[in-house]
Length: 328
Image (cartoon, rainbow, N blue to C red; front, side, top):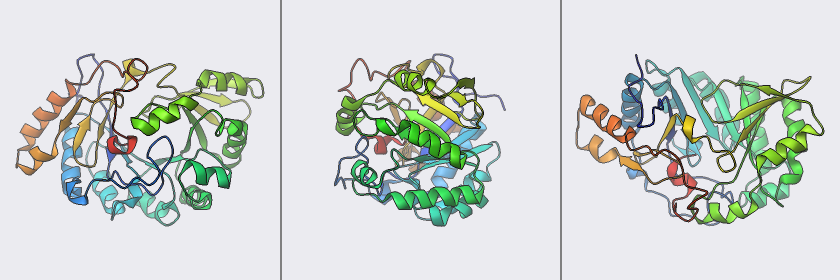
């Protein structure tokens, strides 16, 4: 089916980042404040049947890629069942997952069998004490065991997402490269973004990833590369290895002109841009009993609200919601 979701700037929307919960079992310094507990109530979340319906309508409009996110998506009860429901939808040919991997040791194989093909794992450090500090008390061992379970289950690729922070973990760049070479993982560096108060605090530790690329080029031979996926990373491969390194640069080199995604939050709110407040609430419509045709028209209307670009650089104080509220 021809993609019917084209925004006002000619961008085709083919990718939905689907948050199934705003809750998380970690408190990463750039995402949630330590001790934060003001999460939504589960009854405010879309049910699995409501989620399936919305994603089915998106697929009928031409969307092909869905990524399960949170918060931490593996905290949502019966997440494997939702995976099966979404994997069975006609037209969805790429179903992936973003996770902190703390619960992946037990869930990796069932999720693979249910239809998840690719996973991204947040991992900002390989040092136990530093991991505990960054995540507000998390245990590195749990994440590493989850990663190895995912590797054993046969996920390909497994992408490591490392948010780089000046004076926090920027001394581990080459160590993470070697770790990913050893385990055949893909590595992606991410710049900090001023999402909410925590994100603005973390943005004081901002590192321009061009500097990291130049640093790596002094030790490794970097070759331009590409990689399957729907995200904004620019990839390079280290010569004589299979390691691809992605650079996600929302601040230093924004990629708004090619943005092909929306975020659907756990409570059924469509967010058109990570760095703007343009949104459209679907839950009240769903629970009012609208038809599929009406839902399609509302989604098409929501797409028309997608802004041209974010304003992280121009108006860093503008956005007050945390990353977990929007969906990773």
